[in-house]
Image (cartoon, rainbow, N blue to C red; front, side, top):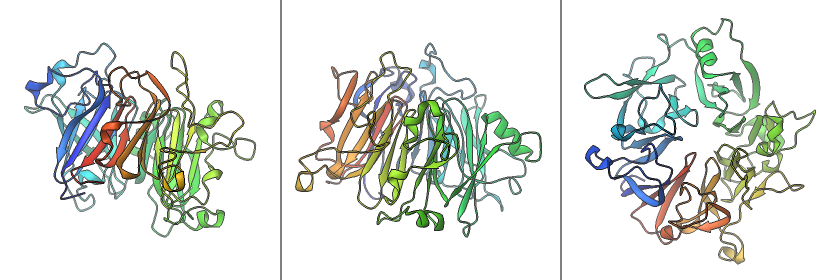
Amino acid sequence: MEGSSLRLSAAGFNAHRQLEFIEEEEASQQSSNYSSYRTIATSSKSLSVAFAGWSYTILQVDDQLHLLGHHDNQTPPTDQTNSSSQATPVAISLPQPTSFLPEPSAQSLKFFGTPTSPLGAVTPSGHFLLLLHHPNRSVPNLSLTPASTTPQTSPKFSAIALTTSGTLCAAVHNAPASSTTHLLQFLSFDTFEAWYLDPSGDVKPTHFQVPGHCAQLEGMATGFVYLNHGGPGADARGGGGGGGGGGEVFTWGDARHAACLGRAVGAEAPADRPGVVETLLGVGVGKVAVGSWMVAALSEGDEAAYVWGKGRPNAVEPKRIDALPGEGEENVRLVEVGVGEGEDGLGMSVEDVGVGGGHVVVLAEGGRVFVAGENGNGQLGLGEGADDFVEDWSEVKEWKGRHVAKVWCGVDNSFVLATNRNP
């Protein structure tokens, strides 16, 4: 998207000013939730959402990273936190390059953390970086720092993810010729750190082996989603055949929330071990978007999206969107938006999708944006007076006729990236 004017807009929860990329003197005029999309950043080169949590957002703007929201990542905020004095975005500095740790670009890092706080990032070469806060410097900032003093000999990873309950899983960085990925699961981030600094010590992770190279590893409320790049194992089972070279999806977690796994659970496919989402075999999945209780998969070949999961169970009145599979139905359901407007009257093709704590945002052909789910904080961007919960797909009219390139979701907010080009 270089050469285009990029504009990032956001809607939803903003109590900790995590949607404000503005000058300090302007900050006091903001801080309420956004019920409609507002522009929060622009760029002529590169712009994306690197992390979106309950109280933090990390934006990648050109070659720089910025943390928005509550700044002390060692002390997560509460609902009563007064963040009015912490509204200025904080720069995140990258590590100095060495012979064994090439300087990563801001665009190449894979951030991970809890739904509240970012904790670190993984570089393309597999190095694990901690996000450290420096509040006492003349210009307060954060830095991404190698977690080990000997990173050249430390374990390397393709991705790291955490569940809402704090369980951590790390995908070991594998050799190009390898046809499998090793997954290591830990009770917490602290036990993972202890193992990382001393792999031969007392901490013994749970070990899984899954086919293919890791494309994505994401955490749900009580489980994980793994997407591979395909490979010999996937081809043998029919995965990665959607015409676009995508991979297959594996899920595992708590059997009490089996709907979030998108697959049958039983003696031969237990919930607590990675199992393939059979409905998607042959689809060729290119991306998964994972929220607390819902998952969406985007195919590369036919530009279709699929969803599964359940409504947020800790809501006062738990509700589910109509797009989710119902009782007695298939584990996964095809997303159908704009029915009657696509070719032959069928649903429109899907170009991107984002999933939050209880809502979904779909980018359809022609830059059309459709939303469904929880809207109590305005996260659907439908404007003042919209229902607190939207069961069926509803179009965000302001994006119709504009060139929308990508969408993301935080826990209770949404982001839309648009360019100045026409669809």
